[in-house]
Length: 119
Image (cartoon, rainbow, N blue to C red; front, side, top):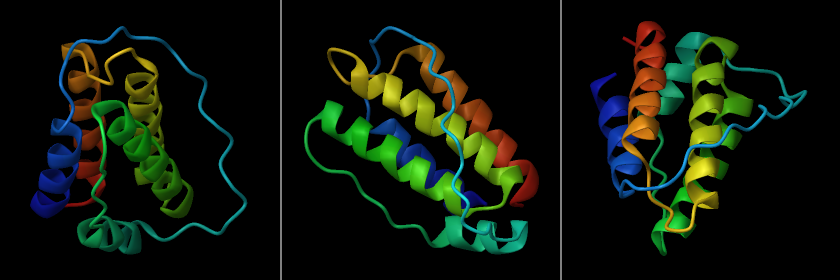
């Protein structure tokens, strides 16, 4: 879990703070069979995604990556990852591509939810 948390915090931490919060409805999950919780945690611990480009481009890439991951993993860990995807899509839609303190707190909350399953 520490590796997952470090990877997620690193990716999420690459964004600067300072954009407005908006709400977005979650997208419909795909019909692809989901992994077990155990397999999902293993997958998350080996995920090596690294965004590139400007802050806005990175936020969009992270949001898309989180969306793709949420669609693959067990619902227990997929739901918080979906929330993280939605938050990062909000960040990407901001003028600067920077996270607010509130969005950072929301991401941390979702990471902690994942940590309840991936210990």
